Image (cartoon, rainbow over all chains, first blue to last red; front, side, top):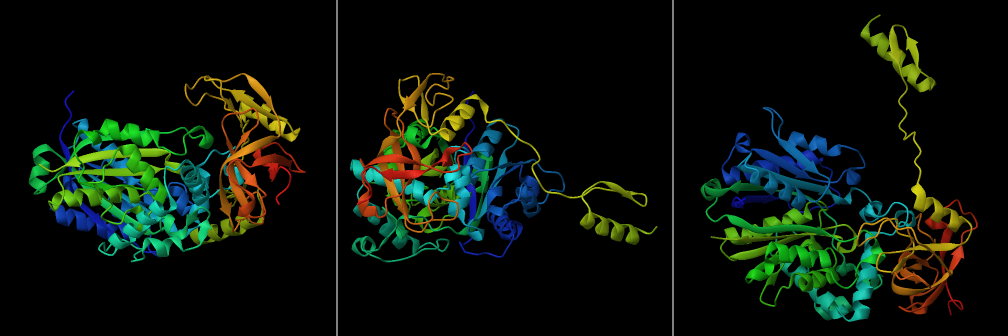
Length: 352
Length: 170
């Protein structure tokens, strides 16, 4: 079966904030309206709506249902939700358009990450018998991975500080980013450990945020955008949930996903990598085979603004915008999920 | 009876008892948020948790010959059900570690400690637990550690209170 040509034709993101007092509906509504205005379509033009969020963050089962108020359910709509990052919702929408049932989909995601102790909440995702009773936070699990990489010589503390320094500088040019700075690598290396061998700047800043993108097929996409970001390959792979049974010093799921998505078939101008920890960006660059010529995370990446469940879709939005602007021709968007890079979704997009 | 008086009856009733009853012509049930069910942990975890409560370590052998501790019920590589049990000692080696300088309530230790992946002697795949190392200067990849059993062992991974450094944290 021949695949349909599907592209991102518009994006909208809410600037990051902390301790937001708004509900998910209140933060989503203006972003979705802004996106519809930008693309120049009505709600009735959307054939499929797909949402990514996490009930654990609001501490309430089925809390995601409330978010339907932000898109309006009358006249009746076709919608779905994934208990995952919006990037996975985008994958579902891409499959839905591939079936031929619909031509246009709107994907949205939100995360009020700062409402609770997110590091501890995330440990509920781990094995309920062998790991979760010990209550390790995600920072601690990432620190174990970082130590293994340092011991093996796969990364150095200086390289990790370089990732943080570059990301914080790039964030100065991004209105949506949260943590900004101009520190040198030496200044960052002089900071104390927070979760030895990690320092504060090695860990992503949890923020509240949301975003949305519109996907469209074929000539409809060409009509809706001057330069659509065509999805040329998309793939999602998962490593074993057993923390000790997978390699700490490489990411096999990211490597397979990148190969299946066709990353290595041509040069990549811009890669938006979802790496909540500095050493993970270095691991992912190795796994996906990115060369020095690729511009990594010009947005500052998830390190400077990590709205959980929206940070992956944000990478798709940022990468697509660089195609829209003509500053890149072939881009990569990546999303991770789970402790220590357990899941990886990789997508390659191109301009025409 | 007006709607208003029924509503008041219901509120008074719900706050005062936990059984179902008729209040006037309205059937009233209490609202108790709970998960009133139990689950069995299955064949493998039952044996594993029992062995821990008896201060014994047992792992399972995977399809590639590697020994998993904690035991794996299904082979992480092939998905096959695993059935060969292997008895292990209560010592092991740190394969990677991180320092929790400010412990959070519910973690294995209330004072600063190391998280570690520990390969139990006789096993091949490491497990996550805490090491009571005293200071990050006392622990490194390769440090030998030994199980410290919890006094109360209801059957679970926390039957292992933590690990101590062999020879003591100097």
